[in-house]
Amino acid sequence: MRRREQLFLLLYTLFNIIANKFIWVYSDETYYWMWSKRLDFSYFDHPPMVAYMIKLSTLFGDNPLFLRLSAPLLVAGSAYFLYLLAKKMFDEKTAIYTFYIFVSSIIIIAASTIISPDIPLMFFTTLLLYSGYVYIFEEKKKYALLVGFAAGAMLLSKYTGILIIFALVLYLLIYKRELFKDKYLYFAILIAIVVFSPVLYWNYQHDFISFTFQLHHGVAKEKVFQARELWKFVSPQLILFHPFYLLPLLYFIIRDKTRFEKKKSYLLLPFLFTLLFFIYNSAFKHANAQWAAPAYLSATVLLGYYMAKGNYKKLLTAALLLSSVIFITIKTPLGDQNFKAVKQLFSRLGQIDRFKKDIENLHLDVGKYDYILIDGYHGSEVAYFFKKYKNVLVLNDARFSNYNIWRNKDLNISLENPLKTIPSLGKCLYVGKKPEHIKELETLFHNKKEIALLKKKVSFRKLRYYFVEFKN
Image (cartoon, rainbow, N blue to C red; front, side, top):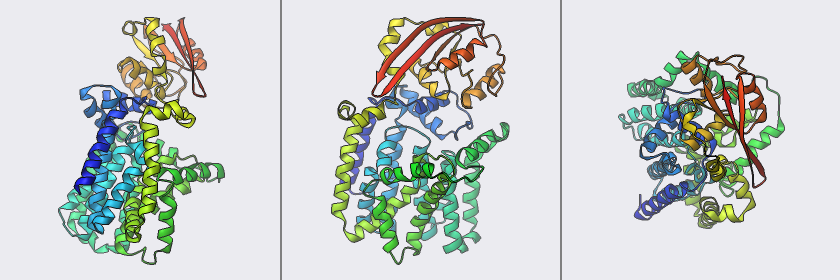
């Protein structure tokens, strides 16, 4: 990598690390923080890699900077390996275009901000694409071992990594069938299975509950066409990669008569296979737009090739300028203070933190309570706010999450909702947003004492938090 790109990447990463400290924490992040405090081989919602990353980074503290530290670092690592991949496949000019396309992608700006399973998934996907290319095209057999590790770590990050593996297997079947006779390929498969084995073991212990959930979560049982859901998934794709990237890439691919040449297909298959899989499934069931993020990694190199070949400097410059505006708007107080859309976006983050002074004025002694009761996994923001990760329970009829598994393991409380009985829990404090959950808790406890109701309007959202004491 050239010094200019090295310096840019260093400054880009440092700015992200520092800026993340001042951005409100999202409730998903606090849920994964709870995972990191209760390390396991896997979890109900996802494999454990994100928890391991947070555990390592929060050895230095639990504030947002350390909570998210692995996100900008993994993004930087992804940028580095994509640069190397583009240079090996094509040339330095393609690598430079690839680098700037990647760091200016909207999904990458978001990825460098919030920690989630998608971030390690993208890093290990990039590592897999790089090591896979060296193994397949340069015939450096020992790189197969890195392929196996990257594939296993990718699956240890998020189950959807299997789509990239399917795409690469399809590539081998079409272009490199002779590799199925190579013993190193089977070493790679064995290493991948070993790396992924903690998830297999955890699912075996829990009746494969996580695999079943994710299958039904992402794939519809009944194929009933839903045009609205399809549009809700497809339309954000035009923005997520970049408004100036996806359509030009598709145009370049269609116009390219050699698009199925071996090298290009190595990039084209993971892109199209992953993206089309989610587009197809979104026609029958809701799919989150960011699920397609891994598709844009190989797409970035492919677009870098086309733009470098056609010398599309003006297009890249325009994209970088737009991304710079978005980056500054999201990463600095300018956006939250001056743009309604950004205020609305940020209103989803750090909701309980907006009540910090109000909560301090309540003079609550959280330590005197035997348990903290929250609404559901999104209620993890309450646990993170009080920095309390032990004796946090979800007892209401919320979406099944790892809290159901923890309560069953710790207190032998039923996994299933709604609950009819609970053991003696002593004095508990409910902190949440939903009055219907308070009514549910009233049926489980003998005594109830209302402490406070805090209200505040943030952007268009009317936030409220109930503080209620329960005893049994």
